[in-house]
Amino acid sequence: MRWLSPEGLREAAGRIIPILICITFHELSHGLAAYKLGDRTAKNMGRLTLNPVRHIDPVGCLMLLFTGFGWARPVPVNMRAFRNPKRGMAITALAGPVSNIVLAVPFLFLYGAAYVFVPHTQMGIFFSGLLYDTAYISVALAVFNLIPIPPLDGSKVLFSLASDRQYYNLMRYERYGMIILVAVMYIGIFDGPISQATRFVFNGLYYVARGSAFLFSRIAGLF
Image 1 (cartoon, rainbow, N blue to C red):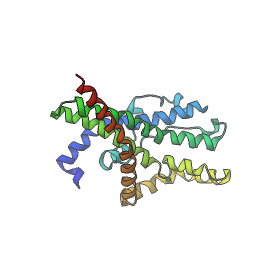
Image 2: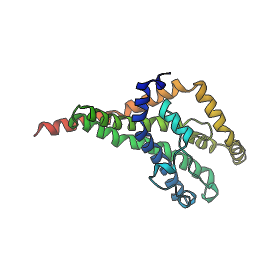
Image 3: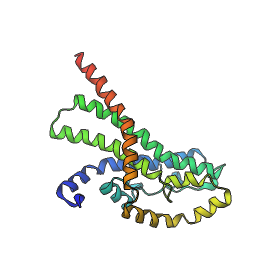
Image 4: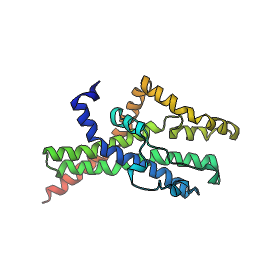
């Protein structure tokens, strides 16, 4: 497999920093959303932090590292603390993917600026690559987590549309979702659709980088 080659391992090593940034922001956003909606569980367990160690899931991190799709350690949420439990869970779940889309925007803006100002040396290319990879991985993490398979965020959003009885029955089987998820990822059923969806969203956001490069090239031309 390509990722076992020396070149693949070097590429994986260069993605560690972007992965840590993306999963930390993702899980922190879950915790903040829950906290704003009345649940202090994440805060009391020290998950409202930018320390990536608090958010890493070993299997999910390795999946992100070598396949581009993965997950972090879920932030604990007590849905009974929400005024509207199903709605609160849906909003808390959506906060993660939405935050990753938002995170991609400033990194693409900086990537466009780096194209103009950062020298095309080996170090400069590495730095620009970190900006690009952070934006892309952030989008990939958002798209992947919207798959409606527990424990991914998409399942909580989809389940919120069910009746109360159906919702709580579905949530009881959430523990088995990880087994299904790993099996699905191993088989590769979603590889094509996820890649296409990620590329579609990323291409739309990439206009930020193009606009940034154009803006800063015009500014640089004034001096």
